[in-house]
Image (cartoon, rainbow, N blue to C red):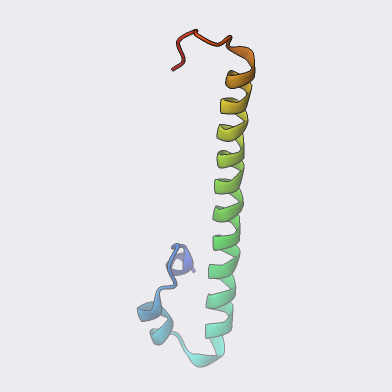
Amino acid sequence: MELAHSLLLNEEALSKIPDNKKPVFVFEWLRFLDKVLVAAQKVRSTNLFDKLLLTCLIPKGMPRN
C-alpha cells in the first residue's frame, strides 16, 4: 500500500485497484494521513512552546534569535 502514502489521495492508483480492495486503499491512506497530521501538530506545538518560553525568559531589550 505504498501508493497510499501521500498527503493527497492517489486517484490514478485508486482507479487501477479492484473494487473490492478500494476501501482498504482509502483506509490505509487515511491512517497514514492521520499519523502525518498528528506528527505535524506535535512539531508545531513544540515550536510554539519554545517561542513562548524564550519570550518569557529573555529580558526585554536582549537580542533574540
